Image 1 (cartoon, one colour):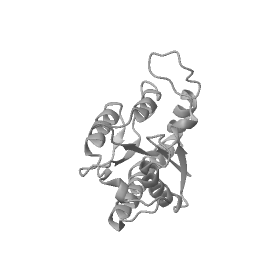
Image 2 (cartoon, one colour; image 1 turned 90 degrees about the vertical axis):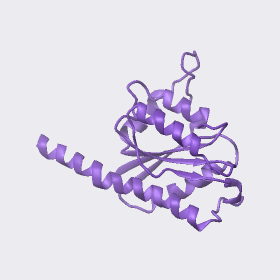
Image 3 (cartoon, rainbow, N blue to C red; image 1 turned 60 degrees about the vertical axis):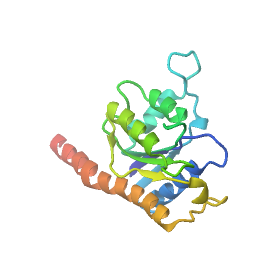
Length: 190
């Protein structure tokens, strides 16, 4: 079974990031050859770099990332960049990072008219720096408060199609680029 990890980039109750990410997760769950692992950073004890805060869950988080084949990382846009929560997750993934050589799809949401473009640019830069394979076509949702209702239903068919397309794009990349490489390595070892 191919594992995909999704990471929620906010802890705000009733957040729109989680509503958008839920659609991506729903699309992944519809494919029998994939297993979804959802990471909510609230459930982990992670440290701020250089602090003495208990980071007992860092190794567990690293193991989840090491064992997955690909990821979806989501973030709201805060002051023109990605959330500090996502930065803390990245900082707890070790050096060299367990994100190295992992394909990653990006999702950003924002209340403004231009969406989360700046947040996704910054996040792409950091993820590329640590060696992740950031896939093209990140999803940036503008005016997010008008896109989802209180129950999390997407009110915009085009946005829902882009979200589902992000999931299928990642799965297609894994099937076409990662799985053949793994099969070839296994054949060579035999």
